[in-house]
Image 1 (cartoon, helix red, strand yellow):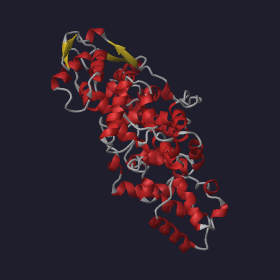
Image 2: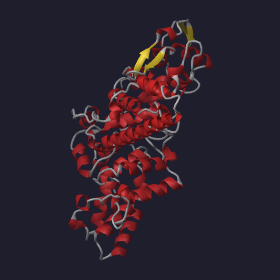
Image 3: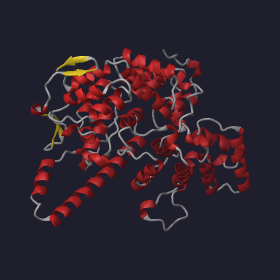
Image 4: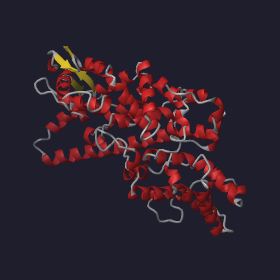
Amino acid sequence: MLTPLPVQKWSFENAAHLLNRAGFGGTPDEIETLHQLDPEAAVEGLLHPPNAPEELGESRSWTEPENLRSQLLKLGQLKGNPAEMRKTLDAMEIAQRDEMIDLRNWWLGRMRSTPAPLVEKMTLFWHGHFATGAPKVRNAYWMWRQNETFRRYGLGNFKTLLRKISRDPAMMIYLDVAQSRKEHPNENWARELMELFTLGIGHYSEEDIRESARAFTGYRINLTNQQFRFEPGQEDTGWKKFLGHRGNFSGDDILDLIVEQPACPEWISRKLCRFFVADEPSPSIVDAVANSLQQENFEIRPVLQELFRSAEFYSDRVVRMQIKSPVQFLIQSCRLLETTLPPRAIAQTALQRMGQFIFAPPNVKGWDGGKSWISTSSLFFRDNFANYLIAGTAGHPNAPAALRRTPVDLARIIPAELRDKPGELIAHLARRLFQTQPNENQTQIFLAYLQRRAPDRGDETMRRLLHLMMSTPQYQLT
């Protein structure tokens, strides 16, 4: 059982930590607003955000299903004209690529500006847990629909979400469920369902994989409306042996039997703790969250409520001890600098270079996270990218239009009266960028920089100071 954080220990630093982990950080004013609440109210506001107008992009093409059957029929009519078929296929591929670029940009925009940061953070968590990639799915509507499923059910009941994902067209294509037949059941979904999504290796057998794969035969996609459909004629209705049970199990029956296994809450707990708490969470925290999952019948909200209210969540072993993921680095940096996202091509290329290209995880395992986020090349890129976020293309009047970006508005983050007060200036920026004060060695480095630039306290000096502070190891942590 986790220990509730005493109200008297609720601090600005702890409020910042909550916003960092349960969202994408916040400005000093946003943190202070949260700090003025008690811990219970602060957590409650994140778990139950006020209703906000949905920004689903209804006018965008990727929010509406297409008649893929009709498209296939038209392509079939072009079999005798290879040149025209190639032209049509190329046009479809370009349109699909452009839709995916727009979809990524839309989600980044939501993460940057959402009034419900935990909803988007949980969407990102499930996106990495139930990893599915656009390069194989090749359909922006299906990827958006899956993203919406994570958003709608991500803070609800895990069993409900698991059932939704078992019928999710993007997942069905990614793990070949849609091609599974009674005569030849495909085992990809059945294997990853247990290995990566629910139980972990060692808690099932090869026979369990084979038998459960039979239960998901008959799962199909209606190409006319792009929705899930069930094909009774392709269902294997024979008796199956699974996890020590025998019966004429359906796919839903298999899911029910899986979540009854003790390994399931333990597995989900470890994944949640690695995402929200630490790369190597303590066994006691993992066990406490697993017990809470069981007691709450896999309802996610009350589990996170207990975690975010706990003293363990705010311990020195947890606060500012997690490496920012590329998405966290991008979104939190834009929030702290109070600036907009870069042009969409730049933002998405940056995520790709830093190792977290959303809607395209490296494999079904998702991203490893933790120390894998940092390498010599990715750290060098983060350094340069931070400078781009701060300075834009100032000083580069001939920069291509796709790269153009105005510098941050320094007046929003640096009071004019602090420019000639080095100590106060550094403390002020540290409160924004680190949510705590740097150690003495770092402070001396920042002071030495300002001393070398004296008496210049112009915008260029301030931008370089920001870049210096964002290039520190401390800034890479959240």
